[in-house]
Image (tube, rainbow, N blue to C red; front, side):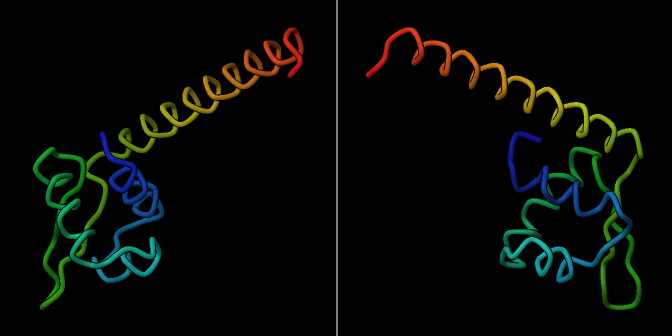
Length: 96
């Protein structure tokens, strides 16, 4: 999950299973990039793949993974907000 692309893929899959080409369309990224990152996610047990005829459909392996990503996002937003306030406070104390 150290990649923004992988986090974005998990975000797309939160709404349900998707084919690689659909994930690529939603994210605006090349299908080869999506496939590579899905491979990493599959090897890590984050997503599972199921073959339907000639297509492979990916889905989140465990719904708790989405909860973890949501919590990570909240923490990052809070940290960014805190840092922004620190910078604003510094600029107020030391006008340019």
